[in-house]
Length: 198
Image (cartoon, rainbow, N blue to C red; front, side, top):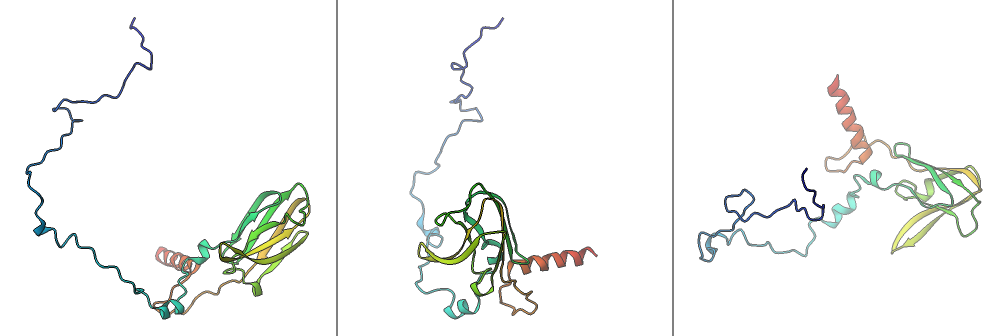
């Protein structure tokens, strides 16, 4: 029988000081002279920083620069009175559906809060349907930014809210330099794939 060793005394990793071992590394310098600066002057130059903007302010006003805004600016529950069952944002139809299960009805100071980006849900073009209760859309100042919040006071049990916003028209005629939206990019890519597959 082989003698047993405790696992604490076994050292699997070892350091090799053998110069012929593949794990041995040695730093060597061929020359002890200082580096030659004549061939490195051009590569070490740092371009000066400019204080002028690279894009003119008129081009920023003409193109909003929100190419993928549809994809990342989305409504979402912020604070809920109950357990979240589902929430879905249908980008194509601009419809947000949210279902929760509340043990108790909401009180005046504990409303369920939903972030509603005004990009998709402008105040003049938003409709709200609830299974029960009352709701209100407020604009809050959060960290110096204006954010649109929907507050919903509902009863106990399973509750549902559907918020419909502004649907964006397909951009048929675009200027060559104009940004297109994320959804339109996806539609065009899918159209190209289907056309190539025929």
